[in-house]
Image 1 (cartoon, rainbow, N blue to C red):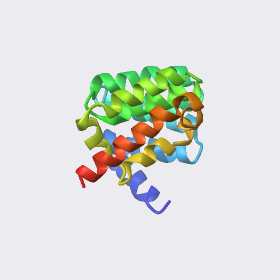
Image 2 (tube, one colour; image 1 turned 120 degrees about the vertical axis):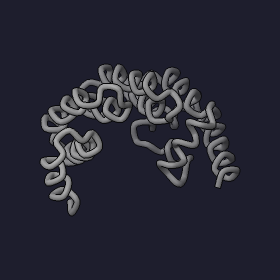
Image 3 (cartoon, helix red, strand yellow; image 1 turned 60 degrees about the vertical axis):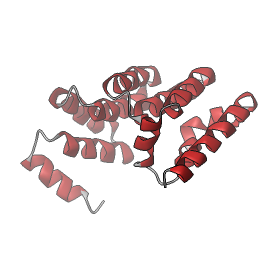
Length: 165
């Protein structure tokens, strides 16, 4: 909350800065103002249509209202940044929220199959395996038929963390 006045001041000063708009979008999502977040996300896409972060931020707004439409946005994130983990992870969450556990697992496996993607994840969280604790993935990680695969992914993440720390 302490950062908000500064973000808003900077947002007025630099109205076309996609990073500032993204920060405002995330803040509005966190406080539950989805109409405001959607308006900011639309502006973000107008300003930076080729930036994967714009599609990711907009995807999270859309995802909260329409998971199927969120998947469209997250696929666009993957198309724009195939070497970054975020599109694969968010798509996995969306599939899990729809009960599409096989598709969710496939997206996670794609994410984990590439060391460059894992490296991008490493810059987002110090404990790579904690990504599997996301509430949106709980149906997947607790499903008995996927437990061995999820445990294997946790092990891979731990090993990657140990090799690259």
